[in-house]
Image (cartoon, rainbow, N blue to C red; front, side, top):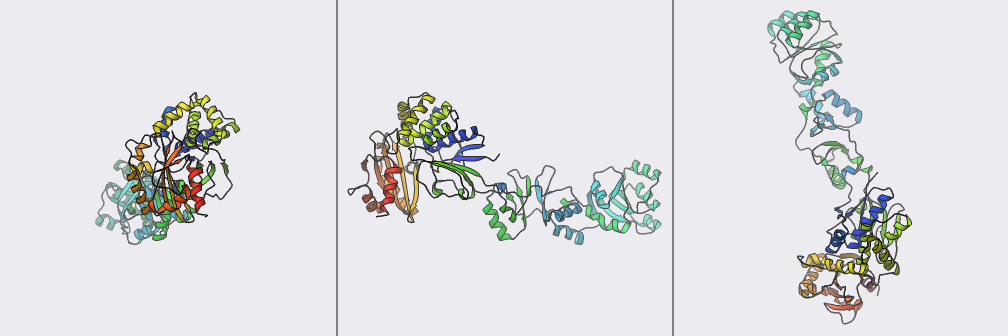
Length: 538
Protein backbone atom coordinates (compact mmCIF):
# COMPACT_ATOMS: atom_id res chain seq x y z
CA UNK A 1 0.00 0.00 0.00
CA UNK A 2 1.35 3.43 -0.96
CA UNK A 3 2.48 5.67 1.87
CA UNK A 4 0.60 8.95 2.25
CA UNK A 5 2.23 12.01 3.81
CA UNK A 6 0.03 14.15 6.08
CA UNK A 7 1.25 17.68 6.81
CA UNK A 8 0.33 21.25 7.58
CA UNK A 9 1.80 24.46 6.20
CA UNK A 10 5.43 25.53 5.86
CA UNK A 11 5.47 27.49 9.11
CA UNK A 12 4.23 24.78 11.47
CA UNK A 13 2.07 25.96 14.35
CA UNK A 14 0.40 23.89 17.03
CA UNK A 15 -2.84 23.42 15.13
CA UNK A 16 -1.14 22.24 11.92
CA UNK A 17 1.30 19.86 13.62
CA UNK A 18 -1.22 18.29 15.98
CA UNK A 19 -3.76 18.05 13.16
CA UNK A 20 -1.26 16.15 10.99
CA UNK A 21 -0.58 13.69 13.80
CA UNK A 22 -4.25 13.28 14.71
CA UNK A 23 -5.49 12.84 11.16
CA UNK A 24 -2.72 10.37 10.37
CA UNK A 25 -3.73 8.29 13.40
CA UNK A 26 -7.37 8.33 12.26
CA UNK A 27 -6.51 7.38 8.66
CA UNK A 28 -4.32 4.50 9.80
CA UNK A 29 -7.16 3.21 11.96
CA UNK A 30 -9.31 3.29 8.84
CA UNK A 31 -6.84 1.13 6.94
CA UNK A 32 -4.61 3.61 5.13
CA UNK A 33 -0.83 3.84 5.36
CA UNK A 34 -0.11 7.42 6.39
CA UNK A 35 2.71 9.19 8.18
CA UNK A 36 2.60 12.69 9.72
CA UNK A 37 5.41 15.06 8.75
CA UNK A 38 6.29 18.73 9.17
CA UNK A 39 7.61 21.23 6.64
CA UNK A 40 9.64 23.35 9.05
CA UNK A 41 10.94 23.77 12.57
CA UNK A 42 8.49 23.06 15.38
CA UNK A 43 7.97 26.03 17.72
CA UNK A 44 8.21 26.07 21.51
CA UNK A 45 4.46 25.96 22.03
CA UNK A 46 4.06 22.86 19.88
CA UNK A 47 7.05 21.18 21.50
CA UNK A 48 5.45 21.78 24.89
CA UNK A 49 2.25 20.02 23.75
CA UNK A 50 4.16 17.08 22.23
CA UNK A 51 6.29 16.60 25.33
CA UNK A 52 3.32 17.05 27.70
CA UNK A 53 1.36 14.26 26.00
CA UNK A 54 4.46 12.16 25.26
CA UNK A 55 4.11 12.10 21.47
CA UNK A 56 7.14 12.05 19.19
CA UNK A 57 7.62 15.00 16.89
CA UNK A 58 6.98 14.17 13.20
CA UNK A 59 9.93 13.93 10.84
CA UNK A 60 10.80 16.76 8.48
CA UNK A 61 9.71 16.54 4.83
CA UNK A 62 11.79 18.63 2.44
CA UNK A 63 9.66 18.26 -0.69
CA UNK A 64 7.38 15.92 -2.62
CA UNK A 65 8.99 16.42 -6.00
CA UNK A 66 8.99 13.46 -8.34
CA UNK A 67 12.15 11.46 -7.86
CA UNK A 68 13.63 8.86 -10.14
CA UNK A 69 12.58 6.14 -7.68
CA UNK A 70 8.96 7.22 -8.34
CA UNK A 71 9.28 6.25 -12.01
CA UNK A 72 8.47 2.81 -13.38
CA UNK A 73 11.77 2.34 -15.19
CA UNK A 74 13.23 -1.06 -16.06
CA UNK A 75 14.80 -2.34 -12.84
CA UNK A 76 16.35 -5.44 -14.42
CA UNK A 77 18.28 -3.78 -17.21
CA UNK A 78 21.86 -4.51 -16.18
CA UNK A 79 24.35 -7.29 -16.84
CA UNK A 80 26.85 -9.14 -14.69
CA UNK A 81 30.54 -8.54 -15.25
CA UNK A 82 30.83 -12.32 -15.76
CA UNK A 83 28.58 -12.22 -18.84
CA UNK A 84 30.07 -12.80 -22.26
CA UNK A 85 30.09 -10.34 -25.13
CA UNK A 86 27.55 -12.52 -26.91
CA UNK A 87 25.21 -12.71 -23.89
CA UNK A 88 25.43 -8.96 -23.45
CA UNK A 89 24.78 -8.25 -27.12
CA UNK A 90 21.84 -10.67 -27.16
CA UNK A 91 20.33 -9.06 -24.07
CA UNK A 92 20.65 -5.60 -25.59
CA UNK A 93 19.08 -6.74 -28.83
CA UNK A 94 16.15 -8.47 -27.14
CA UNK A 95 15.49 -5.51 -24.83
CA UNK A 96 16.09 -2.89 -27.50
CA UNK A 97 18.76 -0.96 -25.61
CA UNK A 98 22.09 0.17 -26.99
CA UNK A 99 24.00 0.14 -23.72
CA UNK A 100 23.82 -1.56 -20.34
CA UNK A 101 25.09 -1.00 -16.81
CA UNK A 102 27.60 -3.65 -15.71
CA UNK A 103 27.53 -4.87 -12.11
CA UNK A 104 29.50 -7.19 -9.87
CA UNK A 105 28.09 -10.13 -7.89
CA UNK A 106 26.71 -7.73 -5.26
CA UNK A 107 25.10 -5.47 -7.89
CA UNK A 108 27.62 -2.66 -7.39
CA UNK A 109 27.70 -0.41 -10.44
CA UNK A 110 31.00 -0.85 -12.32
CA UNK A 111 30.39 1.06 -15.55
CA UNK A 112 28.62 0.57 -18.85
CA UNK A 113 29.00 -1.48 -22.02
CA UNK A 114 27.44 -0.67 -25.35
CA UNK A 115 26.87 -2.28 -28.72
CA UNK A 116 29.47 0.10 -30.09
CA UNK A 117 31.98 -1.16 -27.51
CA UNK A 118 31.30 -4.78 -28.48
CA UNK A 119 31.58 -4.02 -32.21
CA UNK A 120 34.78 -2.08 -31.64
CA UNK A 121 36.31 -4.97 -29.73
CA UNK A 122 35.31 -7.52 -32.35
CA UNK A 123 36.71 -5.42 -35.20
CA UNK A 124 39.82 -3.84 -33.75
CA UNK A 125 40.27 -5.50 -30.38
CA UNK A 126 42.81 -8.13 -29.38
CA UNK A 127 41.52 -11.37 -30.93
CA UNK A 128 44.58 -13.43 -30.02
CA UNK A 129 44.01 -13.30 -26.28
CA UNK A 130 41.02 -14.63 -24.40
CA UNK A 131 39.72 -14.05 -20.89
CA UNK A 132 36.47 -15.88 -20.48
CA UNK A 133 34.59 -18.16 -18.16
CA UNK A 134 34.55 -21.85 -19.03
CA UNK A 135 30.74 -21.86 -19.05
CA UNK A 136 30.59 -18.87 -21.38
CA UNK A 137 32.91 -20.56 -23.86
CA UNK A 138 30.66 -23.62 -23.91
CA UNK A 139 27.58 -21.41 -24.39
CA UNK A 140 29.10 -19.39 -27.24
CA UNK A 141 30.47 -22.46 -29.02
CA UNK A 142 27.36 -24.55 -28.25
CA UNK A 143 29.80 -27.06 -26.89
CA UNK A 144 30.02 -29.67 -24.16
CA UNK A 145 32.30 -29.96 -21.18
CA UNK A 146 34.82 -32.77 -21.38
CA UNK A 147 37.15 -31.71 -18.57
CA UNK A 148 36.99 -28.64 -16.35
CA UNK A 149 39.59 -27.49 -13.81
CA UNK A 150 39.30 -23.71 -14.02
CA UNK A 151 36.29 -21.39 -13.96
CA UNK A 152 38.23 -18.60 -15.62
CA UNK A 153 40.11 -19.37 -18.80
CA UNK A 154 42.81 -16.91 -19.77
CA UNK A 155 45.43 -17.31 -22.48
CA UNK A 156 46.58 -16.95 -26.10
CA UNK A 157 44.39 -18.46 -28.83
CA UNK A 158 46.22 -20.79 -31.24
CA UNK A 159 44.54 -22.50 -34.20
CA UNK A 160 46.09 -25.79 -35.35
CA UNK A 161 46.04 -24.85 -39.02
CA UNK A 162 49.50 -26.25 -39.93
CA UNK A 163 50.12 -29.91 -40.56
CA UNK A 164 50.68 -31.77 -37.32
CA UNK A 165 54.47 -32.06 -37.54
CA UNK A 166 54.91 -28.41 -38.39
CA UNK A 167 52.63 -27.30 -35.56
CA UNK A 168 54.41 -29.50 -33.01
CA UNK A 169 57.86 -28.37 -34.11
CA UNK A 170 57.28 -24.64 -34.54
CA UNK A 171 54.46 -23.54 -32.23
CA UNK A 172 55.37 -22.84 -28.61
CA UNK A 173 52.77 -24.11 -26.15
CA UNK A 174 52.53 -23.50 -22.43
CA UNK A 175 50.01 -23.11 -19.62
CA UNK A 176 48.76 -19.86 -21.18
CA UNK A 177 47.86 -21.48 -24.51
CA UNK A 178 44.32 -22.07 -25.79
CA UNK A 179 44.42 -24.57 -28.66
CA UNK A 180 41.62 -24.93 -31.23
CA UNK A 181 42.03 -28.26 -33.05
CA UNK A 182 40.02 -30.88 -34.94
CA UNK A 183 40.66 -34.65 -34.99
CA UNK A 184 44.46 -34.29 -35.04
CA UNK A 185 45.30 -36.46 -32.11
CA UNK A 186 49.05 -35.95 -32.24
CA UNK A 187 48.50 -32.22 -31.70
CA UNK A 188 45.96 -32.92 -28.95
CA UNK A 189 48.45 -35.24 -27.25
CA UNK A 190 51.23 -32.66 -27.63
CA UNK A 191 49.03 -29.90 -26.19
CA UNK A 192 48.12 -32.06 -23.21
CA UNK A 193 51.75 -32.87 -22.53
CA UNK A 194 52.53 -29.12 -22.61
CA UNK A 195 49.77 -28.61 -20.03
CA UNK A 196 47.96 -25.93 -22.02
CA UNK A 197 45.14 -23.97 -20.42
CA UNK A 198 42.36 -25.19 -22.75
CA UNK A 199 41.85 -27.43 -25.75
CA UNK A 200 38.79 -26.81 -27.91
CA UNK A 201 38.10 -29.88 -30.08
CA UNK A 202 36.08 -28.96 -33.16
CA UNK A 203 33.83 -30.92 -35.52
CA UNK A 204 32.47 -32.98 -32.63
CA UNK A 205 35.60 -35.14 -32.95
CA UNK A 206 36.04 -38.05 -30.62
CA UNK A 207 38.90 -38.15 -28.15
CA UNK A 208 40.53 -41.31 -26.87
CA UNK A 209 40.05 -42.27 -23.26
CA UNK A 210 43.81 -42.40 -22.81
CA UNK A 211 44.11 -38.76 -23.87
CA UNK A 212 41.34 -37.79 -21.49
CA UNK A 213 43.15 -39.55 -18.63
CA UNK A 214 46.40 -37.76 -19.52
CA UNK A 215 44.59 -34.41 -19.68
CA UNK A 216 42.99 -35.14 -16.32
CA UNK A 217 46.42 -35.86 -14.86
CA UNK A 218 47.84 -32.62 -16.30
CA UNK A 219 44.70 -30.63 -15.41
CA UNK A 220 44.03 -29.50 -18.94
CA UNK A 221 40.57 -28.07 -19.60
CA UNK A 222 38.81 -29.58 -22.63
CA UNK A 223 35.68 -28.46 -24.48
CA UNK A 224 34.16 -30.14 -27.53
CA UNK A 225 31.99 -28.35 -30.09
CA UNK A 226 30.09 -29.40 -33.22
CA UNK A 227 31.36 -26.28 -34.95
CA UNK A 228 34.27 -26.62 -37.35
CA UNK A 229 37.62 -24.99 -36.81
CA UNK A 230 37.08 -21.75 -38.75
CA UNK A 231 33.73 -20.74 -37.19
CA UNK A 232 35.09 -21.78 -33.79
CA UNK A 233 38.12 -19.52 -34.18
CA UNK A 234 35.88 -16.74 -35.43
CA UNK A 235 33.29 -17.08 -32.66
CA UNK A 236 35.29 -17.86 -29.54
CA UNK A 237 36.14 -14.18 -28.92
CA UNK A 238 32.44 -13.57 -28.23
CA UNK A 239 32.90 -15.54 -25.01
CA UNK A 240 35.14 -12.81 -23.59
CA UNK A 241 34.01 -11.34 -20.29
CA UNK A 242 32.12 -8.09 -20.72
CA UNK A 243 34.11 -6.48 -17.92
CA UNK A 244 37.04 -6.39 -20.29
CA UNK A 245 35.43 -3.59 -22.30
CA UNK A 246 33.53 -1.76 -19.53
CA UNK A 247 33.59 2.03 -19.82
CA UNK A 248 34.16 3.67 -16.44
CA UNK A 249 34.97 7.30 -17.24
CA UNK A 250 32.63 10.21 -17.99
CA UNK A 251 29.49 8.16 -17.38
CA UNK A 252 26.31 10.06 -16.55
CA UNK A 253 24.27 8.12 -14.05
CA UNK A 254 21.57 9.15 -11.61
CA UNK A 255 20.82 8.46 -7.98
CA UNK A 256 17.31 7.16 -7.33
CA UNK A 257 16.66 10.21 -5.12
CA UNK A 258 17.48 12.73 -7.88
CA UNK A 259 14.63 14.89 -9.10
CA UNK A 260 12.96 13.78 -12.30
CA UNK A 261 13.11 17.30 -13.72
CA UNK A 262 16.89 17.34 -13.30
CA UNK A 263 17.06 14.06 -15.22
CA UNK A 264 14.85 15.43 -18.01
CA UNK A 265 17.08 18.49 -18.36
CA UNK A 266 20.24 16.37 -18.63
CA UNK A 267 18.65 13.86 -21.01
CA UNK A 268 17.46 16.60 -23.34
CA UNK A 269 20.84 18.29 -23.26
CA UNK A 270 23.02 15.22 -23.83
CA UNK A 271 20.64 13.39 -26.20
CA UNK A 272 21.74 10.08 -24.66
CA UNK A 273 19.24 7.22 -24.82
CA UNK A 274 19.77 5.43 -21.51
CA UNK A 275 21.12 6.29 -18.07
CA UNK A 276 22.11 3.93 -15.24
CA UNK A 277 20.32 4.42 -11.90
CA UNK A 278 22.06 3.73 -8.59
CA UNK A 279 21.14 3.94 -4.92
CA UNK A 280 23.05 5.78 -2.21
CA UNK A 281 25.33 2.76 -1.74
CA UNK A 282 26.29 2.55 -5.41
CA UNK A 283 24.08 -0.46 -6.14
CA UNK A 284 22.72 -0.51 -9.66
CA UNK A 285 18.93 -0.33 -9.83
CA UNK A 286 18.44 -0.50 -13.57
CA UNK A 287 18.36 1.63 -16.69
CA UNK A 288 16.35 4.80 -17.19
CA UNK A 289 15.25 6.40 -20.45
CA UNK A 290 13.41 9.62 -21.14
CA UNK A 291 10.20 7.82 -22.10
CA UNK A 292 10.03 6.35 -18.58
CA UNK A 293 9.10 9.75 -17.16
CA UNK A 294 5.57 9.26 -18.50
CA UNK A 295 4.99 6.27 -16.19
CA UNK A 296 5.24 7.55 -12.65
CA UNK A 297 3.95 6.95 -9.14
CA UNK A 298 3.29 10.37 -7.68
CA UNK A 299 3.77 10.86 -3.95
CA UNK A 300 0.40 10.94 -2.21
CA UNK A 301 -0.35 13.71 0.29
CA UNK A 302 -3.08 14.91 2.62
CA UNK A 303 -3.06 18.60 3.50
CA UNK A 304 -4.24 19.95 6.84
CA UNK A 305 -4.68 23.54 8.02
CA UNK A 306 -3.93 25.06 4.59
CA UNK A 307 -4.95 24.85 0.96
CA UNK A 308 -2.63 27.26 -0.87
CA UNK A 309 0.48 26.39 -2.89
CA UNK A 310 2.47 29.22 -1.35
CA UNK A 311 2.04 27.76 2.13
CA UNK A 312 2.57 24.14 1.20
CA UNK A 313 5.44 21.79 0.49
CA UNK A 314 7.84 22.32 -2.40
CA UNK A 315 6.92 20.21 -5.43
CA UNK A 316 3.25 19.90 -4.46
CA UNK A 317 2.27 20.30 -8.12
CA UNK A 318 4.14 17.03 -8.81
CA UNK A 319 2.29 15.11 -6.07
CA UNK A 320 -1.18 13.62 -5.84
CA UNK A 321 -3.39 15.39 -3.31
CA UNK A 322 -5.87 12.85 -1.97
CA UNK A 323 -7.55 14.94 0.74
CA UNK A 324 -7.63 18.39 2.37
CA UNK A 325 -8.94 19.28 5.83
CA UNK A 326 -8.86 22.99 6.59
CA UNK A 327 -10.65 25.87 8.29
CA UNK A 328 -9.26 28.74 6.18
CA UNK A 329 -10.60 30.40 3.06
CA UNK A 330 -10.48 28.41 -0.17
CA UNK A 331 -7.08 29.05 -1.71
CA UNK A 332 -5.16 28.40 -4.89
CA UNK A 333 -4.78 24.63 -4.82
CA UNK A 334 -6.57 22.64 -7.49
CA UNK A 335 -6.67 18.95 -8.33
CA UNK A 336 -7.16 17.00 -11.55
CA UNK A 337 -9.58 14.53 -9.94
CA UNK A 338 -12.26 14.83 -7.22
CA UNK A 339 -10.97 14.52 -3.64
CA UNK A 340 -12.31 14.68 -0.11
CA UNK A 341 -12.18 18.37 0.87
CA UNK A 342 -13.47 19.14 4.36
CA UNK A 343 -13.60 22.87 5.02
CA UNK A 344 -15.56 24.51 7.84
CA UNK A 345 -15.69 27.99 9.41
CA UNK A 346 -14.45 26.95 12.82
CA UNK A 347 -11.50 28.10 14.92
CA UNK A 348 -9.21 25.13 14.37
CA UNK A 349 -8.55 22.24 12.02
CA UNK A 350 -8.63 19.92 15.00
CA UNK A 351 -12.26 20.81 15.62
CA UNK A 352 -13.07 19.34 12.21
CA UNK A 353 -10.94 16.29 12.96
CA UNK A 354 -12.90 15.66 16.17
CA UNK A 355 -16.03 15.46 14.02
CA UNK A 356 -14.29 13.03 11.64
CA UNK A 357 -13.38 10.77 14.55
CA UNK A 358 -17.00 10.72 15.71
CA UNK A 359 -18.34 10.20 12.18
CA UNK A 360 -16.07 7.20 11.70
CA UNK A 361 -16.72 5.87 15.21
CA UNK A 362 -12.98 5.76 16.04
CA UNK A 363 -11.99 6.04 19.68
CA UNK A 364 -9.59 8.89 20.47
CA UNK A 365 -6.63 7.94 22.71
CA UNK A 366 -5.90 10.33 25.57
CA UNK A 367 -2.62 11.57 24.07
CA UNK A 368 -4.22 12.27 20.68
CA UNK A 369 -7.10 14.01 22.45
CA UNK A 370 -4.56 16.17 24.28
CA UNK A 371 -2.89 17.17 21.03
CA UNK A 372 -6.19 18.00 19.34
CA UNK A 373 -7.22 20.10 22.34
CA UNK A 374 -3.85 21.90 22.19
CA UNK A 375 -4.39 22.77 18.53
CA UNK A 376 -7.81 24.27 19.19
CA UNK A 377 -6.63 26.23 22.25
CA UNK A 378 -3.70 27.58 20.26
CA UNK A 379 -5.67 28.71 17.22
CA UNK A 380 -8.53 30.22 19.24
CA UNK A 381 -6.20 31.80 21.84
CA UNK A 382 -8.15 29.91 24.49
CA UNK A 383 -11.45 31.17 22.98
CA UNK A 384 -10.33 34.84 22.88
CA UNK A 385 -10.10 34.89 19.08
CA UNK A 386 -13.17 36.04 17.11
CA UNK A 387 -12.72 32.91 14.99
CA UNK A 388 -13.88 30.84 17.95
CA UNK A 389 -17.19 29.05 17.60
CA UNK A 390 -19.37 27.26 20.10
CA UNK A 391 -18.33 24.05 18.38
CA UNK A 392 -14.67 24.79 19.25
CA UNK A 393 -15.52 25.41 22.91
CA UNK A 394 -17.58 22.24 23.26
CA UNK A 395 -14.93 20.19 21.45
CA UNK A 396 -12.18 21.39 23.82
CA UNK A 397 -14.27 20.48 26.84
CA UNK A 398 -14.89 16.95 25.54
CA UNK A 399 -11.26 16.45 24.50
CA UNK A 400 -10.05 17.73 27.89
CA UNK A 401 -12.13 15.05 29.59
CA UNK A 402 -10.55 12.34 27.43
CA UNK A 403 -7.07 13.77 28.05
CA UNK A 404 -7.88 14.26 31.76
CA UNK A 405 -6.55 17.84 31.97
CA UNK A 406 -7.82 21.26 33.08
CA UNK A 407 -7.85 23.01 29.72
CA UNK A 408 -7.70 26.54 31.19
CA UNK A 409 -4.66 25.82 33.32
CA UNK A 410 -3.03 23.75 30.61
CA UNK A 411 -3.69 26.44 27.99
CA UNK A 412 -1.92 29.16 29.98
CA UNK A 413 1.06 26.85 30.60
CA UNK A 414 1.26 26.12 26.88
CA UNK A 415 1.09 29.81 25.95
CA UNK A 416 3.76 30.65 28.49
CA UNK A 417 6.07 27.97 27.06
CA UNK A 418 5.32 29.03 23.52
CA UNK A 419 5.90 32.74 24.09
CA UNK A 420 9.46 32.26 25.29
CA UNK A 421 11.75 34.06 22.85
CA UNK A 422 14.97 33.26 24.64
CA UNK A 423 17.90 32.52 22.36
CA UNK A 424 16.10 33.53 19.12
CA UNK A 425 17.12 36.30 16.74
CA UNK A 426 14.65 38.95 15.60
CA UNK A 427 14.47 37.29 12.19
CA UNK A 428 13.78 33.85 13.69
CA UNK A 429 11.02 35.35 15.82
CA UNK A 430 9.53 37.21 12.86
CA UNK A 431 9.29 34.04 10.76
CA UNK A 432 7.97 31.85 13.62
CA UNK A 433 4.37 32.14 12.35
CA UNK A 434 4.48 33.83 8.97
CA UNK A 435 1.98 33.73 6.11
CA UNK A 436 2.38 35.28 2.68
CA UNK A 437 -0.01 35.59 -0.22
CA UNK A 438 -0.53 37.57 -3.41
CA UNK A 439 -3.31 40.07 -4.04
CA UNK A 440 -3.69 41.55 -7.53
CA UNK A 441 -0.09 40.62 -8.29
CA UNK A 442 1.30 42.24 -5.14
CA UNK A 443 3.08 40.31 -2.39
CA UNK A 444 1.70 40.54 1.13
CA UNK A 445 3.30 38.99 4.20
CA UNK A 446 1.86 38.86 7.73
CA UNK A 447 3.69 37.57 10.78
CA UNK A 448 1.99 36.99 14.11
CA UNK A 449 3.58 36.36 17.49
CA UNK A 450 1.21 35.43 20.32
CA UNK A 451 2.80 35.91 23.71
CA UNK A 452 2.16 36.64 27.39
CA UNK A 453 5.29 38.80 27.49
CA UNK A 454 4.99 41.42 24.73
CA UNK A 455 7.74 43.52 26.29
CA UNK A 456 10.29 41.06 24.86
CA UNK A 457 9.43 42.52 21.45
CA UNK A 458 8.20 46.06 22.17
CA UNK A 459 11.41 46.90 24.02
CA UNK A 460 13.33 46.04 20.82
CA UNK A 461 10.84 47.53 18.38
CA UNK A 462 13.47 49.60 16.53
CA UNK A 463 15.26 46.37 15.53
CA UNK A 464 12.00 44.87 14.29
CA UNK A 465 11.05 47.97 12.29
CA UNK A 466 14.45 47.92 10.60
CA UNK A 467 14.19 44.18 9.93
CA UNK A 468 10.72 44.48 8.41
CA UNK A 469 11.78 47.27 6.06
CA UNK A 470 14.84 45.30 4.93
CA UNK A 471 12.86 42.11 4.27
CA UNK A 472 10.17 44.04 2.39
CA UNK A 473 12.67 45.84 0.19
CA UNK A 474 14.83 42.77 -0.52
CA UNK A 475 11.86 40.53 -1.31
CA UNK A 476 9.57 43.00 -3.07
CA UNK A 477 6.75 42.94 -0.50
CA UNK A 478 4.01 45.51 -1.03
CA UNK A 479 2.86 44.99 2.54
CA UNK A 480 4.86 43.28 5.28
CA UNK A 481 3.51 43.41 8.82
CA UNK A 482 4.17 41.95 12.26
CA UNK A 483 1.31 41.58 14.76
CA UNK A 484 2.45 41.01 18.35
CA UNK A 485 -0.61 39.55 20.04
CA UNK A 486 -0.92 39.95 23.80
CA UNK A 487 -2.78 36.87 24.98
CA UNK A 488 -3.55 38.46 28.36
CA UNK A 489 -5.08 41.71 27.08
CA UNK A 490 -6.69 40.35 23.90
CA UNK A 491 -5.09 42.77 21.46
CA UNK A 492 -2.10 43.21 19.15
CA UNK A 493 0.73 45.65 18.48
CA UNK A 494 1.42 46.30 14.78
CA UNK A 495 4.74 46.91 13.01
CA UNK A 496 5.05 47.24 9.24
CA UNK A 497 7.20 48.39 6.32
CA UNK A 498 7.12 52.18 6.05
CA UNK A 499 6.01 52.16 2.41
CA UNK A 500 2.80 50.35 3.42
CA UNK A 501 1.77 53.00 5.95
CA UNK A 502 -0.96 54.56 3.82
CA UNK A 503 -2.74 51.36 2.89
CA UNK A 504 -2.51 49.97 6.44
CA UNK A 505 -3.69 53.30 7.82
CA UNK A 506 -6.84 52.86 5.76
CA UNK A 507 -7.17 49.32 7.12
CA UNK A 508 -6.61 49.86 10.85
CA UNK A 509 -7.35 53.49 11.58
CA UNK A 510 -6.35 56.96 10.43
CA UNK A 511 -3.94 57.46 13.33
CA UNK A 512 -1.91 54.34 12.63
CA UNK A 513 1.72 54.37 13.69
CA UNK A 514 4.48 51.85 14.31
CA UNK A 515 3.80 49.83 17.46
CA UNK A 516 0.19 50.94 17.82
CA UNK A 517 -1.95 48.70 20.04
CA UNK A 518 -5.03 47.39 18.23
CA UNK A 519 -7.53 46.45 20.89
CA UNK A 520 -9.43 43.23 20.18
CA UNK A 521 -7.41 42.38 17.08
CA UNK A 522 -6.10 38.85 17.67
CA UNK A 523 -7.08 36.85 14.59
CA UNK A 524 -4.92 37.09 11.51
CA UNK A 525 -7.43 35.00 9.59
CA UNK A 526 -10.52 37.09 10.39
CA UNK A 527 -9.31 40.51 11.51
CA UNK A 528 -6.12 41.11 9.53
CA UNK A 529 -5.89 39.34 6.17
CA UNK A 530 -9.52 39.94 5.09
CA UNK A 531 -9.18 43.65 5.99
CA UNK A 532 -5.99 43.97 3.94
CA UNK A 533 -7.54 42.13 0.99
CA UNK A 534 -10.64 44.36 1.10
CA UNK A 535 -8.42 47.44 0.84
CA UNK A 536 -7.35 46.36 -2.64
CA UNK A 537 -10.93 46.49 -3.83
CA UNK A 538 -11.52 50.09 -2.73
